[in-house]
Length: 157
Image (cartoon, rainbow, N blue to C red; front, side, top):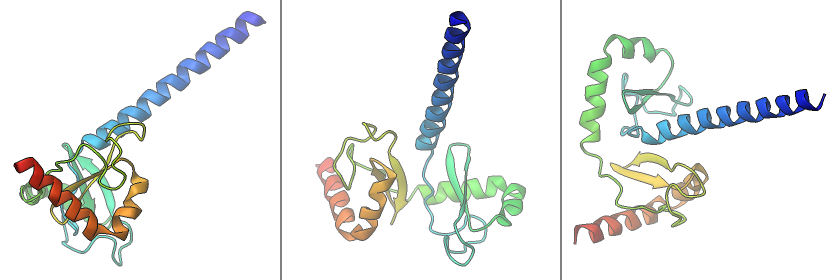
């Protein structure tokens, strides 16, 4: 009885460890994606988050893609290379983040909070220590962008 209980505990522990590794791998893959640089659907050019509801978000060849709705998926698949090129052209305008800390909390990126929350705002790559800092960023994005710009200017010196 004791042996079978120990085996069951060991198998459960291995299973949990495997699931946690899979989850961590998915999170780090998401963090490695180039964030979506446009405020509109890559296919229709409709504003994201408008009448169509939350955007459809997915990864393609290391890029985060966003569609205004599921019905744009068919058109995306038909002309995938065209839309990847459109993404890449938009990405060329994005200034990468000069910071190694969260723009909101000043916490080290990739620390206790896990992989950073990365997105593009006004052609700047924004990195936050976690998604919960996003609401604070949105509350005072003008102040946050000034802080970002000051950090970028300091790096150039």
